[in-house]
Length: 296
Image (cartoon, rainbow, N blue to C red):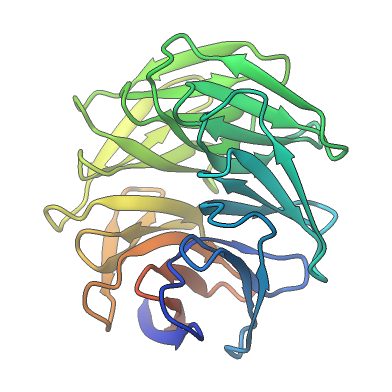
């Protein structure tokens, strides 16, 4: 599969785009960690941005819910943010101080689920803003990304605990150790095969875990790739960012990996998403949003 990468510069300097998601409107929506905005980009590269009400909120990851609203974590402000597609904001402060919300996803119960890195908890917020927090066995686990699994539970990475976690909508937690020591799991997604796929930023591997807990690992060809985020593609594959190698990676469900070099050096790719057309979009912390277009 051949691909061409197009990059689009964000107006103004020091935007620091980080998380990205596909919106219900077909556009891509992203967080500006440094610029303190939520951005929108169309398939043609047209951009618009919306300032976040709280200064220096530290917006990290973002998700579009079934109604089309955008939900995002405010790592520095200790809040969960919500924005309609026409730019109306609501912000919800977390009960625990300095909890550092990070990963975010929509759950099978219609609520939004998120990780709290510093407090070692998993959080849940209803569409009306009611927040519940669930303690993890290890308060220093550093829970990172979170996603809904095919089994109706929420699955998350524990970056400093070297485990994959599972939490039911009732708050029951189960954990699965990763074979590679100190692997530093970060991104996780629900794969086209019904398993959960995750990346190891220090282990330099892509992992796969079934909903019954069976785990496999695949080594990334480029040493020191430092994979960060991962998402399912449209052709039975998965895509991930390689922050350390300045590349985008593709892995099939059989574990075959292909890598694509990013034109801009030191682009620092982080969040990644796939649009309806199957093109791969990703946020480059060097103040660009990029798209990997394909030709067979």
